[in-house]
Image (cartoon, rainbow, N blue to C red; front, side, top):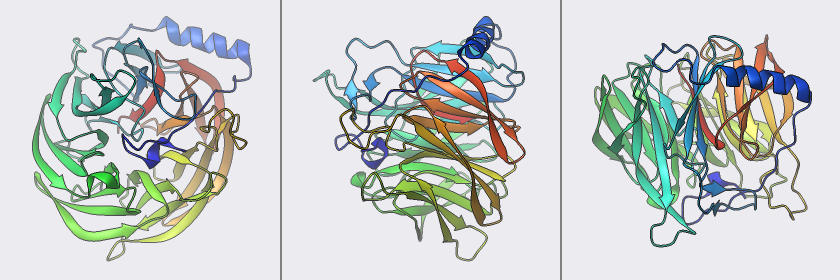
Length: 408
């Protein structure tokens, strides 16, 4: 059971424990180097920025989400990969959540601010449950004061994407079935439009904007399709086209050249079944799905490299099942695929920690980061040609890492 198959109130989710990484001494040495630079660059310019959202209030180790009693506040971790090991800064008491796609964070194209969806809160009437929240944090990355502002959006805001010019941001409201359109002016953000896309039960989860700024795609899980949105200046409207895809689409991305869209979702069968990545040809008229590439069980998130040649997919691989489930595994998987035009091929498969969440390439494409939720750390891989090399660096974070996004 995976969290990306249900919205709040119908969630069926997962279990975990993470396998300890090898080469312990080297890991500790690198971790100390990372720790030595904490807090050393507040207010400095960021380079190769990656942001991790770390939740503390919802635990997944039983195979279903459970509220943590007396939990520590949620946090953010900011990584600067202009050097290696990266500089790190932790920000405390910024609510965010694991319930929703790991694209719950977005960074403006100019790197000036970040948006962080707060999808859930603990039910004030019943502290053992959680209910939808309805705001997005606005974090000014150039200010010394890291306290974010808020902007109200629809119920259970989830995936977020900016337009290429940074003037708009689109937010998928999962429990509402709507897209909130935010206008961005410097560090000021306001909601200016709500676009009805699907029913509240359809699990509208993520949204991606085309590099030309005139098209967006939104993943509708229970409908097994991508909704097409048309962008006209600062107005967004729902198009008539629906693009059928494999399974229940969750994370959706568009290649930097605008040629393809990619999404992956779990099918309706057994957790043993292999799931697939859908390749959508955006250059064809009309745009349409042209290929399905099997990747493994339980795709949680995916990302495409800045040059558009590599695709990384993280898989639950049954590591999210309950401890007593006979098919439960000891690790998740990271799958690397290569892309040429609309042709996508599997290149490499790596074991990672249980219940992987977000995955992100740094903006220069030199590194790939993967969150391992129960182990409270982020794994760092180096890209070498068309392969990944595990650096053995595990960045410890103050919480269970749940969402991840790199600056463009």
